[in-house]
Structure formats: structure tokens, C-alpha cells
Length: 632
Ligand code: AMP
Image 1: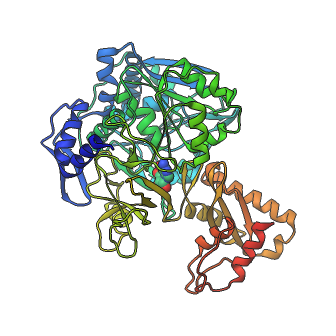
Image 2 (image 1 turned 30 degrees about the vertical axis):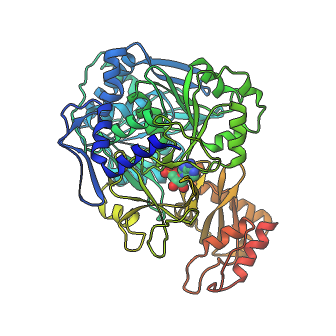
Image 3 (image 1 turned 135 degrees about the vertical axis):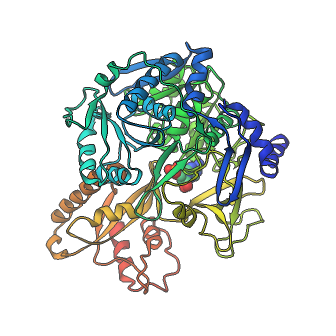
């Protein structure tokens, strides 16, 4: 059926050097590489060794030189009613100003810069400016709060933090500065400077000697020229934190050259974006999709990219489709949750817009359920392409490479392994590959991971090996921590996580992080957080708490008050994104006789499923209490 793609895929696995050498032509190199891949020390892969390049040069300068007047960054905020379009030439000017401001703050090649910002152009300027001068950025999602932020500050020890006075969501101002100040007070590491963008949305006191107002600093740098730093292909470009089984988020470290090549190749083979067209990804720069497909990918491909601040339903549920019409968007990228939100509204919002420019809608980040896929496919009348990947990989593991050869999609499946990914389904007990169709196992990738994937965990090579490469007995393979099956046609289906990670509205959260946060409240003795299926958000977090002094909270009023307090604790420490949908109080938690928490049994009961084999459970009443509670 897909002979051409199959041949390309086979080449990418069997002769990876030939395959990737060719893809590397898609980017500019300051110095050619000597070796395509050095995999002398598995699982650490080094791509395009000896080569020098720069992400900002590939995303901005090379287009500014040839098509400087073309649209590059289109900023739309329905929160502040702002629309600004920057051409490649204007983007280059802005990025150089930001780069000069960062340099004036003492930022040097290899230093970290933490970016804690809403969806405003300065956030993209800051990312690109870091890439330009060789600083390693670490963008922290604006929805995270002080404790999340402080732990990231301590882990990546930034020289400078770039932030803004506030974001806005649904017309509600969300001040950032107080959270940042709190995080800086909590963190042991003290950055030398804080660069603040003042949007005029919230009061913002600058701390003398530390905080700098961006507008004033930028005014001194107008017209400045800051050259792109030649970066070794293997130099880190950024760190992006993501949640896992333990409470401490992991810093996913990405390289420079491999990432540039991987994104350029994906724009051509998977997303099929052409220079001069417009790409619209509805994600946030705080997530990996924002890094790869709001900022770097489309710009590297010479496309204009839309950066959208606002809700999908404000001023009405047609806003995204109006933007597609207005800016002639050719490729759109969103998440199933967003589509489920839009599904509640009149489809005429879609029908009333001229969508003739749109080639396809890509969806990723969480499972795409069939009713949602059917609905959007029917209303849009365009290909809907589900793609599966992770913060760790930076670009799709599973998708359809329609740019190589058109393939048919199957509802419920994110497609087939993409070139470069040697994907296997592995029996977690025996460590053997599942060779038959429809056998369930862990979705795993044989090393080396292709270009663009994580190099290591920031500052912790051991954790990289222990976390990702050691979970399958007897094998050095990368675990995605997702269950999956492959059907008789080679299409994969993802069946949920193998670990304690949950996915709320496409946002990946660690249940342990939420548990740790709730445990910091003095009334809490013990807590279990599980992800429970939700029609709109895919999953929501549900917390079960054992209190130190249960009689003190025996009335429904007292419990309701405490539930509110506990939610506030999570809001304040981790951010509203991690807030459990409910906090319920129980006398004890279901555990095995050896004391292991039976999260899966709790989850099953919450979803009204059979909890399975409970012979090792210590006290069965723990689970029946929960069952009774969730049924009320
Ligand atoms: P993140 O690192 O935040 O992008 O989350 C990655 C996780 O989201 C994966 O390991 C999957 O559990 C889930 N995921 C991402 N894309 C898909 C998809 N297309 N279908 C099913 N699950 C997905």
C-alpha cells in the first residue's frame, strides 16, 4: 500500500547515516559535520558530530536574507484585542534587541535563561534570542505556580529569568510577578537578573538591583546587531521539564543540530508546510508542541506562525476558523480536548469560515477518541491526522508521513512509526518483542533515538538511563511508558500510560507531584491521586485523603471547606492546571500487605470498572469505602 514510505522508513532504520545525511541538507551549517551519528556510548546518541549551526539562524536569519518581507510571527490576542504581524526582517530586529538585553544582563553561551511568560511575542523573541547567543532556554508553562517554578530554577540554575507582569485567560488577569517573586524567594539559586515585560495588565514592583524593565532596556538596543553564535551540533539548545513517576520533574535536554534537522524534516514529510504558508498551532510555548511547532519548526520551514493568546471560544467558537481564513492557514495543529470543547458549539462556526487554504488538521497530546475524530472530520472536510509523541522526543514517533506518500488514516490510531524511530511493542515481563498483530505491550524505541529527541536528563545522565532505558528486563531500549498494540496493517493504537502519569486536557501531570503538594497541608496524613476518565478533558485528577484528625472534619461543611483549602494549596504550589477535580476524605487507602498503594484499583473503581485481582490487598474495606464515595 505505502511502498514508497516503507522504503524510506527501511532506509532510515537500516542505513540511518545515509538517510539523515540527506535530511541534514534542509538546514544551513556554519561548518559541515564529520560524522552523522556517534553511538559509541549507548544510549547517548550524538548527531551530526563536528558540525556547527544555529537554530535562530535557520529559523530567522536565512529567511530574513531572502524573503525579509514575508510574514514570520503573527501574534493574536483575543484577551487584549491585539494583532501584530512581524515579517522575518522585523523578527530578526526584535530577536537581536532581546539578545542584546540578555547579553547586557551577563548571559553568555551555555548559560541558562528561564522563560516564564504568557503567549506574547516577547516569549518567542526570548527563545530565539537564547538560541542566537547560545544560551540554553528553559520555558516554564505560565500555568505553573511558585513551587513548580522554584524547583525548575534550582535545577537549571538560570543566569537570568525573563517574565511578564501578567497573562490573561478568559478576560481574567493572571499576575505572574507575585508567583515569580515567591518562587525566587523559595529557590536556593538566585539568578543575577530578572527581565520583566510590562504589558500594563497588573501592578509590577521591580526589585532594585535585580529586576529590569524590558522596554527601557530594549530602548537602548534599537538597531543593534548581535551575530548568531556558531553552536556545535551537540550543544544543548534547551531544557524543558516534564513529569514522570517521581515527584521531581525531569529536565529534558535537547541538542541543536539534530533538533534543527528533525524539525525541518518533519515540516516537509509529516506536516507538509511550504515556505510562505501559515502554520497555526493552538498549543502554548510552555509545552513541547509550542517549542517545536509554534516557534522553531514553522520558522525553520520559512512559514509564518500564529501565536494565539486566548480561549478557543472567545469572542465566539469561530475564532480559530476566522484566523484560518484571515491568515490563509495551511497547516493547523491542536489537541483533542480543544476539539471536544468546540464540539459543544454550533458547527456553523466552522462552516461560516473560508477554510480553502487549510490542508490538514493535526491533533496530538492525548488519545483522540473516535466520536471527536468523526465530528471534526465531518465538519471540517479535511484530513485529520492524529500524531503521537512526547516531550522527550520533540517530534512525532507515530503519524502519517503524507509528505512522502499519502496514507490512509484509521480512527483511533495515531498511525505508523515515523522514519528514524525503530518502534517495538515489548512484553514487559519477558522483554521480548511482540511479533504478532494486536498483542499488547510497552511501546519502546530501539536506540539510537533519532535526531531531535532528548540527549539526556539535564545534569543527570544516570537518571536518563535509569528512567528511560532500564524498565524493560534485559533490554537497553527506550520506554515511552505507554501501552500499545500494532494491528495487522502496522497501525499502532495507544492504550494509556504504564506509569503514574496522567493526561489532563493534553497536559501531562505526575500524580506524585500532586500528592506531595497535598501532603504539605497540615491536616493531611496520607493521600492518593489517580487519573479518572473525563468526557471533556480526557482525564481529571482525583484525590483521596486520609486526615490526621478526621473527627475535626466530620461535617460536610468542614469537609467542603477543607477540600477548597487543599485545592488552593495545589493552585498556589503547582498551578491550577494540576488542581484535582475533587478531594475526597477516606479513613484509609487501599494498599497491598507490603504497603504498596493500589492506585490502579482506585482508578478502576472511580471509572466503575472491575478493579481486577485484589488478593494481595490488606484491608478490602478501604476500596469499598472509595467505591461507596464515588457512587454518591
Ligand atoms: P507530553 O510529553 O506532555 O507530550 O505527553 C506525552 C504523552 O501524552 C504520551 O506518552 C502519551 O501518553 C500521550 N499522548 C501524546 N500524544 C498522543 C496521541 N496522539 N494518542 C494517545 N496518547 C498520546
